[in-house]
Amino acid sequence: MFEIKNLNAKQYFGILAAIVVLTDLVILLDVPILRQILGFLCFTIVPGLLILHILKLDKIEFSKKFVLSIGLSVSFLMFAGLLINSLHPLILKPLSLIPII
Image 1 (cartoon, rainbow, N blue to C red):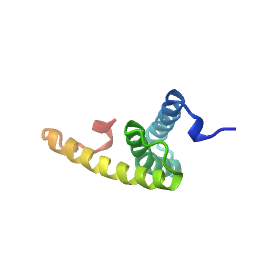
Image 2: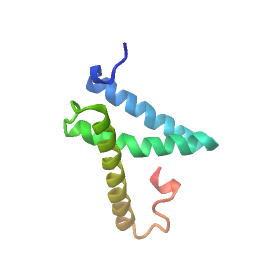
Image 3: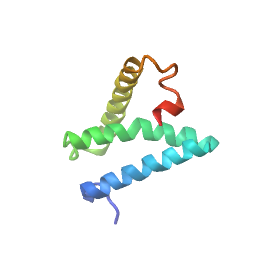
Image 4: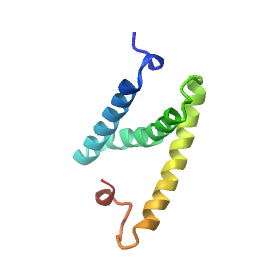
């Protein structure tokens, strides 16, 4: 049976990469409802899961991992947005769709 705990690193990153690619395709194709849902889920969960995996916090229980991944994702995206906005003073809209993609 498919369990998240039994995935090795290659499978784990493959699934996360597939989620990111699917989200990018939905955003670029401008699918109305899926764009908002997948964008929200991808940006609030995936960065935190990657940070937790880098910090080797894989053996904590699911509820703690879920809350930590959301918190880490939100804080990472806030600091990344601040960094992008302050490092690109010549771009008029640095956080719009085209410069980010």
